[in-house]
Figure (cartoon, rainbow, N blue to C red):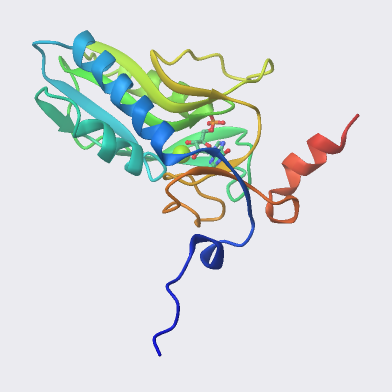
Length: 199
Ligand code: IMP
Ligand code: MG
């Protein structure tokens, strides 16, 4: 007899709960793409997706943008690296194109401390684009954001918790989960647990 099909729980038993179910994400991505298409109507845009977390969001978004679109991906490494809260960011793969004169939209999965988006807006801004804006699927609600950046297009404001799925990872895993989820206590990064433990 064939074994039962694999389930998401088999793959990722440390998932505790779904924060944003796939249908809600799909609805919001549709609305965001309409907003972006209206904003750039009649223009060609160059999306600058941040690898790797934005790839699922990007794939869903661009197929709903009836505009001429070019892609110029970038790689950013966050510090301290493996875990949650980046204290800084470094550009490890710069855009492969000259972005001068282009309408550029930076696309990332999530805005947390702001270092990643801050770095990219500075980097691309220095390349003399015709216009520059930023889009994130998720924006964490926090009043102590170290780098103050305001994305022009935001999918969801979420609580300040560590999330995975729909492109977002923990230690490289969970990106293929279709929903945005919260992990169990024991599986979550230690820095976040330490913060929550404070009174
Ligand atoms: P920032 O530079 O602190 O704004 O962090 C942004 C980057 O950190 C994102 O591009 C993500 O790769 C990663 N990140 C921040 N929060 C989370 C999370 O909750 N889950 C997964 N990755 C996250
Ligand atoms: Mg990232």
